[in-house]
Image 1 (cartoon, rainbow, N blue to C red):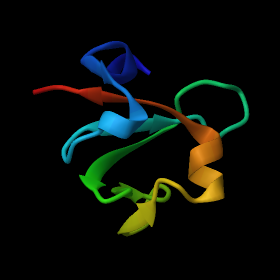
Image 2 (cartoon, rainbow, N blue to C red):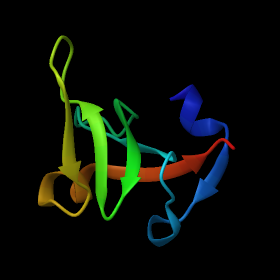
Image 3 (cartoon, rainbow, N blue to C red):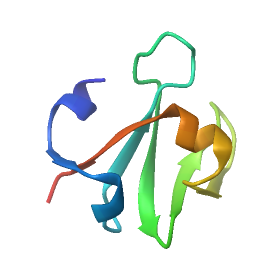
Length: 74
């Protein structure tokens, strides 16, 4: 949550590789997951504690529904 409060807000359509993207995945509306945007509607993230890093589509129904916003830190 603290990471989301810092950095420069980036609109979904203006995300650049390296921007962090944030999600609320626990049903309470709070930030609970973060990924790194890699371009072409894709991001990398660890799907859960102890799980491997993987690539997913930001436009998938699950991630689009839980998307909160993006931030740039450069």
